[in-house]
Amino acid sequence: MPRPFTVEDHTARMARATAEATAAGLAGLVVAPGPDLAYLCGYSPTAITERLTALVLTAGNEPALVVPKLERPDAEKAVGAPALRLLDWSDGEDPFATAGPLLDPAGRYGVSDNTWALHLLGFQAALPRVSFTSLTDSLPMLRAVKDAEELDRLAAAGGAADAAYRRILEVDFAGRRETDVAADLGALLIQYGHSQVDFTVVGSGPNGANPHHEAGDRVIRTGDTVVLDFGGLKDGYGSDTTRTVHVGPDVPDEVRKVHELVRRAQQTAFEAVRPGVACQEIDRIARRVITEGGYGEYFIHRTGHGIGTTTHEPPYLVEGEERPLVPGMCFSIEPGVYLPGRFGVRIEDIVTVTPAGGRRFNNTPHELGIVA
Image 1 (cartoon, rainbow, N blue to C red):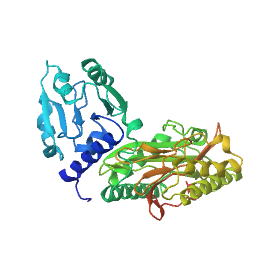
Image 2 (cartoon, helix red, strand yellow):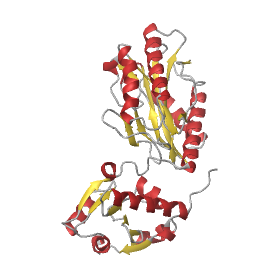
Image 3 (cartoon, rainbow, N blue to C red):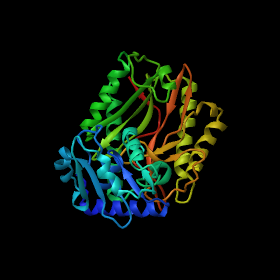
Image 4 (cartoon, rainbow, N blue to C red):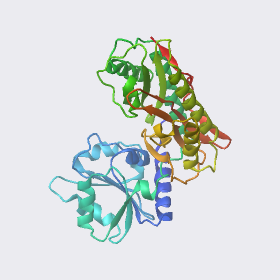
């Protein structure tokens, strides 16, 4: 079991977030329930409803958490609660009368991307001169650089996903629905320590040409190429890996060709990971390999996304993202080729940046898996 996060951890995170907000020219942060709130102060409301909950961070002031009165006992149990000033409001009261005085009436604040419009509009109505910007735009790297404890959790989550992949190679594919194999994957993730399954993509045959295909009722056949993309949360941190398998030993030449091309693109991009390289450069390198192989028009998504307390978060490995890689960043490298109506191939590992280069959190073979 990993070491539990402490109030000291959360105090340091809130202090760093406040300092980064100030450096970005913001008056502070308004943080809604979700991954940002859990990361910063360790509080995750049992139910996220129309009732306002907001963490307000401003320089020179104690972090303040505004909560519904009926949920205050839960908030007091949060790991970071001792570092917070708790303010509650009751049903029938205006929550913005409680939260509003915490904000500079003419300030500009970073706000969680997942804040309900109901709550953001409430702040705007109560404080018409206040302006807001999303945390992804204003502090995109807030959760991007992981400390040693977070890296250990991500490594453990990756290892658990790897164990699930090794076991799924032993089950029958032919004659079963995609949803059957997806259920097997989900059960294996839970068996190997995940508390939450976020997705189990099983794209067989032509369905594999849709990068975000959800497992459906299609019956998998011998001769199908199948994309397996799956992950979730273990000890609060994410896993996300993709491997491509073929049903039966008779693999068409083009499937072998495309798979080898994607494997080389993934490996070449991984070898380019090092501090100072721009995020977009990793995308360019993977894309160049696939384009030179003749399939560039069929690589239709970015090369990667960050991962941490959620399975998709900054940084994004995509053209136009010039931010340099730094040690502690964690992200996927997942090039793919998708041939409409035929098949798809994707290979994905979670990678972190170290001073010496890249380190994988997924370590199962990249070769085309053969299943029955």
